[in-house]
Length: 293
Image (cartoon, rainbow, N blue to C red; front, side, top):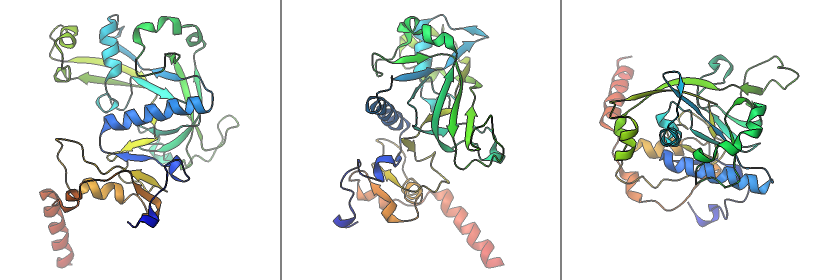
C-alpha cells in the first residue's frame, strides 16, 4: 500500500466508527471495554456493566470468590454469554445467539444498542455489589443484575410489523439462559481448584443478554460478513497455529482496499504460509468434480 493510501488517524471518518478485527478473544474484549468506557466519558454517561446471573443446581452461588471467577471467564468459554457486559447507549453490538434466523436476528448480527431496560430494584442494589466489582472497570461503575431486555436497532432485520410503535428494525433482545459445563483444566490456580472441592467439572446455569460490544471482533466472528470498512490487526498471536486462512478471512471482508486499513506492521512471513492440508484436499476434490462435468 502506498503512503498516499495510509490512514492519517483512526479518529478520522470512517475509521473512527470502523470495527477492529483481531485474532485473540482477549484482545477483542479489552478493546471493547476500553471503547465502551471512553464513550461514557465522551457522552457524560454513567459507566454501566450488566452482570450475568449464575446458578448451580438451581441455587445462587454464595461463594463470592467462585462467583467472581465465573464472571471473569471469557465469553467464548460461556456460550457467548459474558459474565461482565459493559454497555453504553448507541454502542455497536454483536448478537451472540440465534434468536430468529428467518428474520436475520442471529449469531453474528450487528446492530446498535438503543436502550437498556432493567428491574427497578437494581437502582438500589449497587451498594451490595462491592464484592463482585471488577478492578478493570471505573470505580463509579453501575452494575445491573436484573436486565429485562436490550432494545437493539438491527438494520438487516426482516421484521415487517411494528413492535409497540417502534420501527421494524428496533428489536427487544431478552436475556437468554444456557447450561454451561466448565472444564476444571481452565482453573489454573490451586485456590480456584479448591473452590470446586476437586470436582472434575462444574455445571452452571447462566442468564445474560446475548450481546457483546462490537467495536472490535475476532476474525472467527467476522467470517461470512461483508463490512463497509474496518481496521485489521495482522500480527499473529504468540505460540498459536497460523495458516493462510487467518490472513484471507479478514482481508476478504471488504469490497475494496480503500475500505480497510492495516493497524500496524506485521511479519511478511505470514503471507507465505502454505494452505492447510485439508483445504488443499478439498480444493483438489472440487477441481476433480468440475473436470468430470
